[in-house]
Length: 104
Ligand SMILES: [Zn+2]
Image (cartoon, rainbow, N blue to C red; front, side):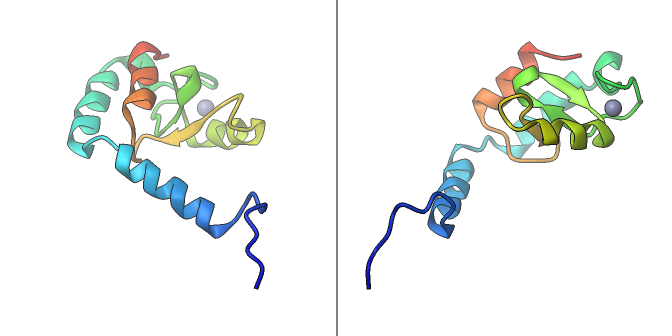
């Protein structure tokens, strides 16, 4: 049996990435407190793109709060243009910093 490490979408890589994400994840309680604070700003409750009330998603690299509908659009741009992430997700320090420094 030949071992191949050339596949770029192997299940091993997926597991490695998932484990790394879990290891770097901040305590959800801290994340909740930070988002509660960020969402106390009315601007962050309105989608940065369509102005709709009620943001549940973010574009991390843009530090922006967006609605689910616009998130689908952002997702189609690819992660380099817009790193879409639900508010209800695991967050690491770097990602959360983007949101704290950003905002709508
Ligand atoms: Zn929107």
